Image 1 (cartoon, rainbow, N blue to C red):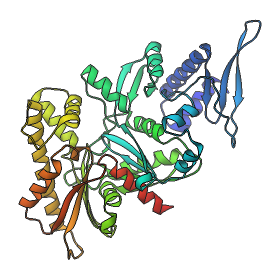
Image 2: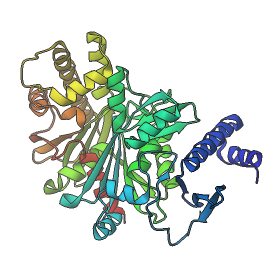
Image 3: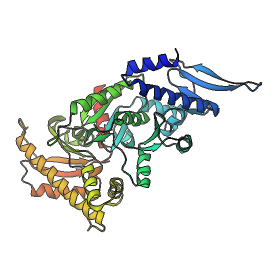
Image 4: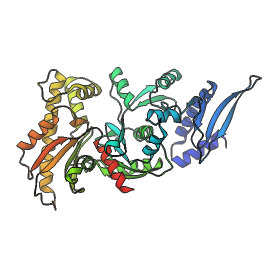
Length: 436
């Protein structure tokens, strides 16, 4: 098979434009060739390893060491390179994930998997309870012009990146925020208002790249439960499309996948002692997701779009600063209990107040409208989670707003999740454990 035949087959199989496929193949061959010239090996899963060889005569050649299907080659000491950068070989990948001990690695390989695919962050939970291991990556990326020098610097510093057709480099995940803050720009977002961003053509590709960093491809067909938002009260986004695309993505990586509502996942992770009865609220970047459950059975669930991104964008607009910097200030120093000290803090307090009041009103009205409600013979708890609920004083302000609202039910207490940023992912892992 020559290059032209390869281009035609890839275009036919993926339904991608022929010219885009050609650019991708050219970029891949250029990257592989440059790596081999530097004396590095190139590892390609399913194919094997390309190794540069230099004979005594000085002639250079490339040798293919075929991959073993059932017995993958052990990690050697050679330097390898991949199209996604960052992790250079399997052993480095295990070290980064804390897999130095083989016993621990085996137990983690069989642990239930929960994935919170949020607008702001993607969080993986392996296992449940005190033994759960969680990892987090920002669901964002920054584009910079391509140069071989930049690529080498990113690789040396183990910065996750993706080469987009040889024209630009996508710096994704946690490192994207540093680049966005330094250049005073807003990071690009693969998701918007809780679902796939229709205006970002590379959104699904970036999400897949981030997920593969957390959850590599597998042939074991493990079950993974992933989070999806509830129906929007004031939104028209297609949740069916969003859920189907993420499910297909995870199945393409070799997993069995099932969607779980975000609010219900919070109930799974935080309300075991209450027989999984109460209200779970996941206040994230794109949406606030609410679920009322009775003994783990969802009674009603909904979402509102006044959440973290709404606050950040509104504050950035009135103070004239970048959204990324507002978000960093909010996450690092905001305390809703104290008097605002800066213009940004004052604006944050105002929009947080509006967001809380609108969320409480939505909860009241949806509870009134819901049909077939169970008899609430005792007060129920409300548990809050998500990055938007993390600032100090948020729980107190939310509880105060509840007291002033005319709620048709009694609340026993309002609490913050044990770990607000990972509660949804841990709840998804609990759901996955019961799906096995």
